[in-house]
Image (cartoon, rainbow, N blue to C red; front, side):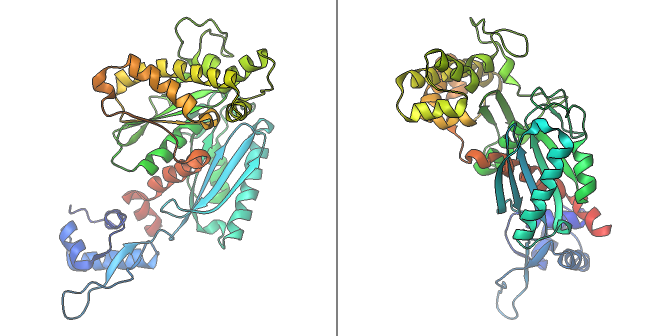
Length: 385
């Protein structure tokens, strides 16, 4: 590795292991004087700091340098249809401040984003930071998003947002890059960061009112040609004629989503407005609710079984409101997948509930922007500008 860049040195130190000048010279192949100049620039801009403990091999100890996760601050938000979770994190993804609020995304983009800015300003002030400390913002939205432009595309639950440039609007006001993706993708990123780099092939499935899937392939999020990859909610469930809001019949979310399960419970004269009410009934031990959630898992598992045969993931993570029903949903999913998938595809497959729960979205949104601002090119540009 002989690339003469500031960003290359920083990327080496990001693994958390302190290294001396001599070690960095050996790793990069650069001249000692060049490494010293680059380290001085990184120190000046606070991207790195001297490690707490000097490294000594006898004689005068050598100073070791380490990545500084507090060099910059990241804003992360998971915007839902009726609620939002916001977080301020450092460059390691550790949450510095967090807030959950009820907010109606149907009020439109500018009122929603103005509220977002005001809330982030309060959070930053509360943890001793200013907007000038922010290096970027990651945003998750509850609808299809063209990731390259940061624009929602015909989002069915977000009136007035179609084609609105969220990235440009927010970026011009915070003075830092903004990356936008759909909520399921950022949750997949969050779960992948929690699972660790050893998990290269992961499916995150969100089961709420709707159903969606985030795909981690080869350690990277797979978005597809236009960002529509993972929209499994409109795959047809064999034998079902239930009409979906999209106009088709038999769509998975119209059969197995939280709203569909709640509707079946209401037909039995149970109080269930949404997925959260379904979970409440399950936790109360209602046998009909438990049976319906188990069947929802089976229906979801039938669709996921085809994906397991096609994609061969090592982990399937289940999140979303209905996932709070616990093992009843997971058991139905496992039953269908293991019954319908090839043995080779399921030999090392782990199917589990989300580790991060409601924090998966902000964790993934932060991870998305951290990886963007810490590329060698971005670090060099920030220092040279």
